[in-house]
Image 1 (cartoon, rainbow, N blue to C red):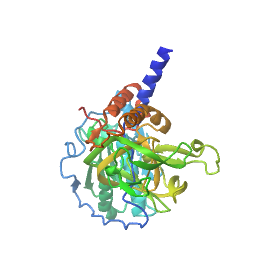
Image 2 (image 1 turned 45 degrees about the vertical axis):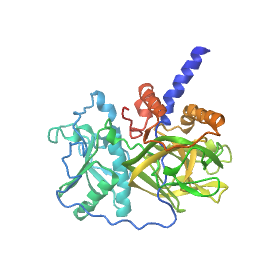
Image 3 (image 1 turned 135 degrees about the vertical axis):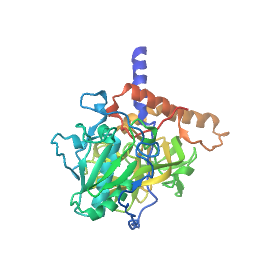
Image 4 (image 1 turned 90 degrees about the vertical axis):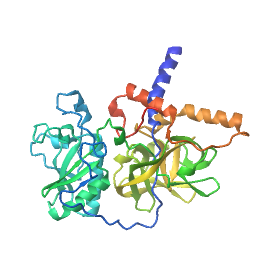
Length: 416
């Protein structure tokens, strides 16, 4: 029995890396639709940022060529996004292979292209290069670079396409030639490549007294609106920030609904989607939590209607924004309604229930502290950084779990 208990505890801890990351969040409100911001096209031969590609301020150093027989080949993932046209002139599927970070940025850009020019798609002319067609130490050899155009090959669009690529979060964008735009990203093992984070600090939650509060201002003892195991609205204790960074700029996905509310979260964060509108059974049979980067227009997410129920509404469009500061709140229920949209408090592994069980020790510590020291409790400001428990869980998880079980952009942890 003791051995079984130890095995169960190890399994629980390894899976808890899910919690070790974030609790993404929503944007700056909802309702009135913003007008698209004015885009400043890149000039021919301009690159952003204005430093060399393989420097720390851009995509970082060259890590070495990846071949089909190398150990690092497993770092590449195929991109089958139907909103992207892959030239694939070698007819080997090589252009579809890329790192997960490159894939996420490319998918985000594909959405922006369709929003900017209805009927036009993103086109990839070069992706991973296994044949040695590029200069020495090209990031194409690592699946970290793509050359792109629009599907209509309208060269007058390429300056704006370059700007859209910058907005999508590529780490280096170069209007390289009249024929294409070159984009690249940091290596997966680069701390700077991790999107980390959670909600922007300006995202808001609803307190039990009906007032609104920004995520960054939450304090232990606050009771905020979330959802119970049956998907019903319920007020729940805010426990702590499992990750907090008030200064770093990060890329967030903005998921906008046709009803108005929208939520802004990091790629690896979990968001509840509806998958069986006709179901009258348990919540787990009509909703599930998936990575924000996997949500697609046409799917349904859950929005607060009045104060008594959460209803599924259709995702209208998805785009990306950068925000300074990110906060990952954790509640007793493991859920949170942010800017009227229901989200999980967890990320990194695509299983909300496992993540919730993994954070049981944090909830237990919170309850014991509240019970023993309620009269003396004075909330103090929490310092920036990843919670120590999360760090331990994350590192155990990376050791015990298959790398493909975790979202590669989920967490940025540096030694303390």
